[in-house]
Image (cartoon, rainbow, N blue to C red; front, top):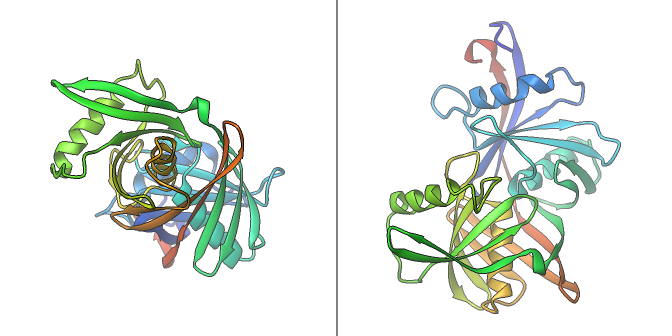
Length: 281
């Protein structure tokens, strides 16, 4: 991939500001061991295309397409809600998959429905008993109440006071302190700061594992935030999750005692298509 004559076709998309580079790798031309470094190089903001992550489309025996997701630090993610929504629209518009498709991810199969510029994901069933509620962490004498749950990837949801207007740089310090606590979070964690607006809306900011920064939007974070608020009786379904980059809608469907099926809907945007030259790699 470092040859100056090498060229890679890409599409850039975003889901409410959470941006990704997408490469069709159904041919397997780019080997698995090359992908982490390729993500590092392509996702650089000033010297390359830039993005929160790199996704590749591959062939799968368990779905219509296979999704590989690499964060901008080169780490591989099991699942990404906004990324999967973008990938679904990409695959549909490229004729790779029908409007209702199954995406094979490391977190398991995900069913996606594409309608215009919107894509909806069936995020699967959550056993509510698996969600840790009312957890407390003391940092520098300050008490933080949070919930912890896995919606394909681990998420911490901090219940933030509506009047808390501290700067993002201060929130980032808190997020990193949570992430560094490997006794509580052995896999690491995405950290969400949530404010309840009303019974149907929450505000959310997500400091993403693998990006190591706040992103404009996070699909799995939106899902986790909505569920955490719902479990505490703060909101009713469907929940509008207001990220800095736009709105994701989360539907919580009770399937039975202690079981909920989660759906994530949001807009996708095709930004550009082009060629990356080898000298950039």
